[in-house]
Amino acid sequence: MAAEGNTSIQGYINHHLSDMTIGEGFMAVNVGALSVAIILGFVFVLSFMVVGRKATTGVPGKFQCFVEMIIEFIATSVKETFHVKNKLIAPIALTIFMWIFLMNLMKLVPVDWLPAVFGAVGLLINPEAIKYNVEGYSLLEKIMAHPWSYMTIAPTTDINITMGLALGVFFLIVGYSIAFKGIGGFIKELSFTPFNHWALIPFNLVLELVTLISKPVSLGLRLFGNLYAGEVIFILIALVGLYQLPLHFAWAVFHILVIVLQAFLFMMLTIVYLSMAAEDH
Amino acid sequence: MDINFTLIGQSIAFAFFVWFTMKFVWPPLNNAIEERQKKIADGLAASEQANQDLEVARAKADEELKAAKLQAAELIDQAKKRAAKLVEEETQRGHAEREKIIASGYAEVEAERTRVREELRKKVAFLAIAGAEKIIEREVDAQKQSDIVEKLVAEL
Image (cartoon, rainbow over all chains, first blue to last red; front, side, top):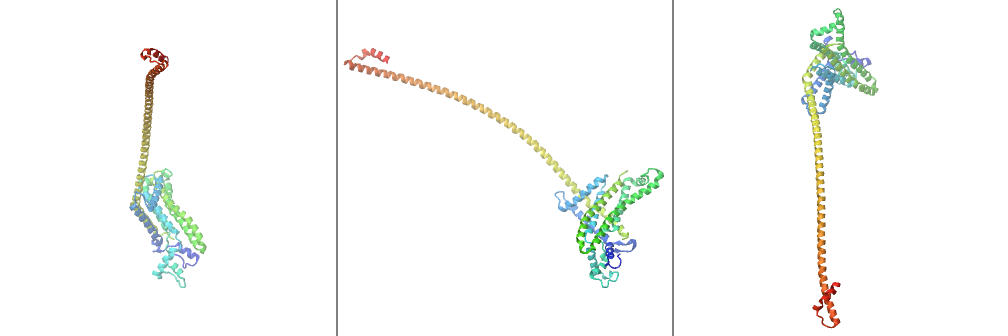
């Protein structure tokens, strides 16, 4: 949570970089990020499912065309990288790409819009929730002081979200390794590469475990770092007053690239990691 | 922003969405795409086949046309020859006819001429006799002098 007051620059930045939380300590949940992430996930799966239900093999509609373009793009990427036959890998890639893309897309919504809306709603419904003295504040400041205004709507700027995805990928890597090589094969691979000698097993084990763990960590941190940095720039741009309009526009245009690129990278690296897990070396 | 329970929640959501996609999203869409690909491939193959058929039919038609042209040329040739022959024959027949007609004309004219000459000769003989009668102022026995007249007439 932000420090008291939102009128200072530091307060403003803090306000935008923190999320509305429920609970304490590790059991806390970042409501904004997680709920938006889940909503977007449902937006993705339900819209695609509806298209799939109504999909015709004849002349497709425009949205079906768009969906099929994405599907084909994913299928090609998977086919080029993942050579073992597996019916889970393409849905994983599709989910990752579309979900991260949609979550990234939320960053293009101007940083103050939805916090202001949530804060106003919160002020109407539950005005007592403001935790410090707002005596003499303007209405806008009161809105922004309300805890509900801390709702973050760009989930991928939250490290929990990106690392949560990476954790999922980590389990998939382990799962694929075990499914394709067996537990014995997996342990053997961890123990006997890169140096195939029994005396070097502990060394190999340390090396391979670091490699294994660095994969999801780098995935999650790459996405988080890119998007968080972009968000910080958006917040800083929002601070400069009227001049923010051209700046914001330029940065948003640039971010369209980042959004797609980061979603694609996450997907591609996941496929690569999973194909490495599935194939023998 | 600290690591907290959101991470676990997100992982669970991730697992759920992957499962959901695998179960309800990917298969129908992929099936639709693959089916359409098959349809298009079939259509392309069919059109390719049709093209080949067309090519074959065209070649066949060309051949037929060529044969027909050849036959027609032969027929025309024959007809021309026949016509030439006919013309030749007719011309010859015409010539013959003409000759015949001319010859018969000549003969007729000749006969007429002979007849006229005969008549003329008779008339001249008569006139000569009449003249001689007048000259000698006496009746001459035409019958007796006819040999002289004959001679006279023959000299005409």
